Length: 110
Image (cartoon, rainbow, N blue to C red; front, side, top):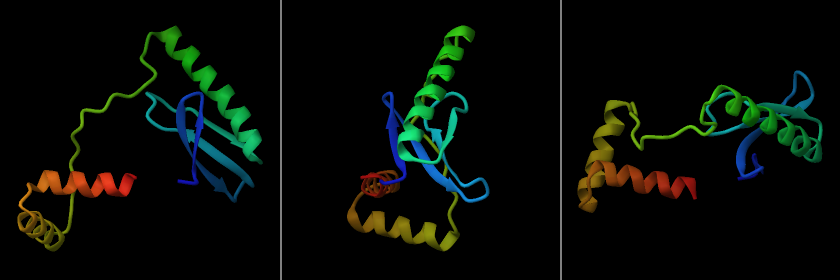
């Protein structure tokens, strides 16, 4: 995926903010906000390293785990017709709705 950058073993999503004319990076999966701005990829890496370092130091200071932990559960709301169609497709494949959705998400995340 070309809008994800890895810095210090952590992934961040990068988008261009046309209002300020800079790229904005935001780390994913952290227990708080750690964002950074720059006008180039090399600048993003440098600013990202600084932002991550400050965030991790703050977590140590206040005794908080920096990484968000996921339960593996989430709720999805779908239109009724789509819900019915997905249930039919799962049944046609002989799998549970959960297994069908997990497979679809695994393929989409690859």
